[in-house]
Image (cartoon, rainbow, N blue to C red; front, side, top):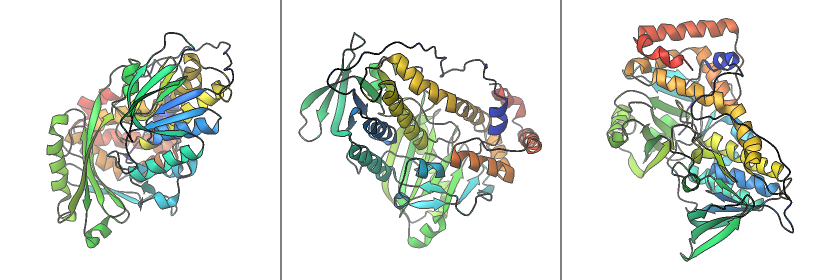
Length: 453
């Protein structure tokens, strides 16, 4: 799932954040030391990437291009997709060389519906060349995985069943797996493991990376008659309210010949089908007569794991917990974390010629990742607590979505994954409008303590 839920105060938050601020939960301070690394005689560093989604494929591609002997494990055939809204930011197309023909729809307008069904069109400030790319995960994942193989990674189709952890700093990790073609049990010894195997990561369990809260996403793909599908030609819809989710949002995202209609929740996972009925009823006649062609459900991490690196094992993507609160965005951060980690291993190992250790992974991957994105994750967590906790807060959120300055700052931050530059006077005005909306919707007294970071 991913949508451009407004992050209208990001500039204020980021600019006022002190580099000496107190460390927050889920992100641990890093103390890193360096030591001489032993050479690997007669071979290259061997790395196993567990999981072939955007995170694993991006990591495997970076590793293979950097001269590392790379193995990528994927249990699902190319046609199997993870349930996902499938929205990616514009910058990802160029940054990850995503061909335009993979895009199903170019969304240029998002319509937000409040609990009382007041709607606001979000997208007035988009330039003529700007859009949100909508695609299917089975298409994107297959493309990225094939590209990693073309770069030199070896694809192993099979299910990883166990990982043996070594006792010495240079002994290998042993990956046990069941091959897809003949169900035979096999094993592979490697120097480094990158876990990109999703929210229920077996790799994370094997290193005791710690538990974390998960939401559940439920989605139905619905094929519509042509005349109804034309309504969603370049339009996505977002719905909020207790009837569709007690702590998140519901969505209608257009695909090539169908729409993806879904919702998510962390607090009331057992009621997810009730909330799905709620979004179907809210959308109403716009999808009436459509045929459900696929039903999907999947866990979504709510925050980064307590440990994302242990020994010579690193977690990326959903396995690490890199899905933003408030917007539910995960595809870009999965691919980005995989690439950062892969490049970090290449750098630390000097192109695969030297062994690496935990300090290398902490320095070249985790420290760089947290420096770039930790504040983004924290801030969106705050927004979700303030605006998604009640229908009153959701009404305030939708009201603020009508502000063109909010829209410009949100889209610039989302589409290009960098801080949008605003004017101080506009930021102050926005802050006053935000407080005014919270007061009017009677959430200021119960929710503003969430702004204390």
